[in-house]
Length: 118
Image 1 (cartoon, one colour):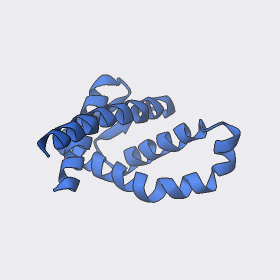
Image 2 (image 1 turned 30 degrees about the vertical axis):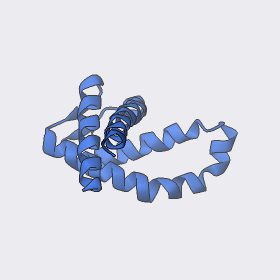
Image 3 (image 1 turned 45 degrees about the horizontal axis):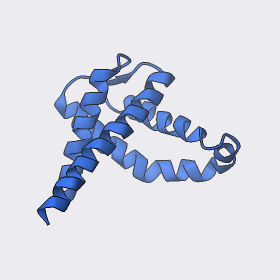
Image 4 (image 1 turned 90 degrees about the horizontal axis):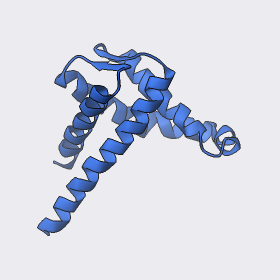
């Protein structure tokens, strides 16, 4: 049940973010669900490997290189999924930043709801 809730919240975050940013386009809700699942997979499997191999660049840039890695995950997701278009590197960077912010807000509100029910 928890994974389904996370996918739903991520889907809402993807839809909201694509609505806010002009350089990102999503065809529909099912595409947004697929984007949420693929981004979750990429962030859990591929991102830690990339972070490990780019530790020197991350340290040298004081952590700013992580924005490049996040943008790369979004751009890779865009290449893998038809109906999800990210028009450039900066759109991918802003998409990842706004998506993280909105996801945090949605997860925070969900966490508060769970704590009040206990």
